[in-house]
Length: 476
Image: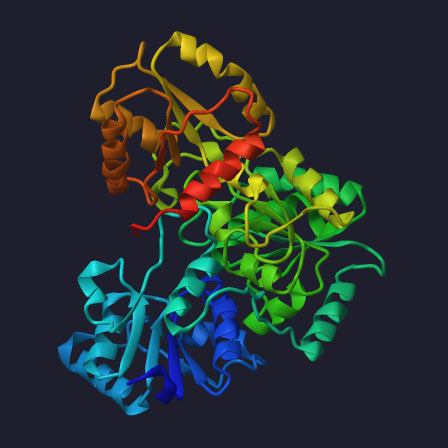
């Protein structure tokens, strides 16, 4: 089938709130590119209401597989038959996992678009696209847009698409008024939860933030899930009715309406974080863990400031299984308050496509490889400037450190190195090998560069060169 014959499209994204929101810019661009196409989304009941009022979508199909409703081969074959009955012309795998890729293939969907870097299942897709996951500078939205290049998309961006219902906004406004929100008072929402790939910030930190927000006469409201009850009760015990809690007290549409009333949202990367971004709410974005990158998962097309103080955690970063809270305690409550107050005063950053030194510096760490003490001394002026700009780095001095693959991999993983900058005349093959081997333990292996530089170069100029080298990556 040729693209000219496509009429109906299924976009697959059956997982969490944030992941679903982050495909809405791609769907908007797809609809602009092919306005006659009827676009449906395969999602969970849990996220269905995110698409209420979204004119780009015809309907949401509820996926029984993700939530465990398809067990055994017979049930899976029935699931394939369900796909076949839908009779789509094109499926776009924004969530490229084997059960869905296989279902589209077995159901005989004529056109099946997916990321060809997943080689073990890419053969089941006949419209290949390339998502360059090693490119640290790309936001998840941009990775989703990369899939559309096979359909004629070339450039252009869109914000996320989300509607807050006006009647629910008024209902939440009334409810907040009953909880003490005064006209003209700044409303700051703190979401206590985190997604599965990150760690929630600690309760003691939020307590210090709330103390300062109340002193500034702002209204603070808490949201979260059942798992946040202990943190909620601790904060309510400390602040009483001065803080309002709606933890586990809102439906998804009510939560959307509530967030739309905020002057500032505070929290780590999770579903409601991206709801706030989609609604254009300013975000004090706390990114405590080393491997969850603001460049990839940060706010999109809304004002924000990052709280990402350097952590002294000695472990490889696996947030879901990490026994330490070092990175959480390393994030300063004063930094959070400063970010909130700056945003309330209409300051902050705005994430848009293109080179962004602020984000690059807070999402990456460079390992400078030097051959001797003299070179280490030569680059000191640059290192001082990087430190001033809060651009983290490490030094590997061949004159004093053993260059074994095992030792180097430990450094790359422990420090979460994202760029290896080799300032030696030779030995590049070793560092390239180390970069690729580190992929066994790092979600994104480091970029290797070996260009020479003057120690008087500005951090911004150096960062722009790194950014450009990331754009030149072609292998997954």
